[in-house]
Image (cartoon, rainbow, N blue to C red):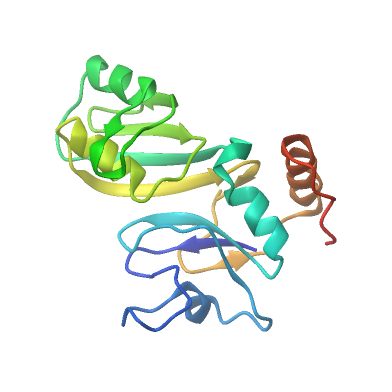
Length: 181
């Protein structure tokens, strides 16, 4: 399933956080769980499945699967900011430097970023390192699946074409078998 997660909804399936979780949000008739996470303050595309192997293949950082976001920060940025974000940022608290990524300015305070890893609060941490605070973060694509015009809080089944392409990309990145639809 492709879900448009609103801000304020958590991706965990536990009730530890008293906020609504994404499973409660969509009320899907079968048991499904999120593929990866989007933090509570973020919105946008989240995939959900009942296939653990599929979830693991999509989330495994070693497979270099792309995830694309639209980000708005609290102040105008310059080309040096874009360059630093593209080259990778040292996140001392995680003891890691982020992988090089694609970054494109969309406005004075808004940019598009495409990552191939998914560290905890990665984009927020990268921006903080560069002196910026994220005010809006929206994931718009995971691999070949796009959020498109899906309304906040709604979900849709991936299309047959998306499913075929998703499996092709997974097969090209690992030794797993094609997932049944």
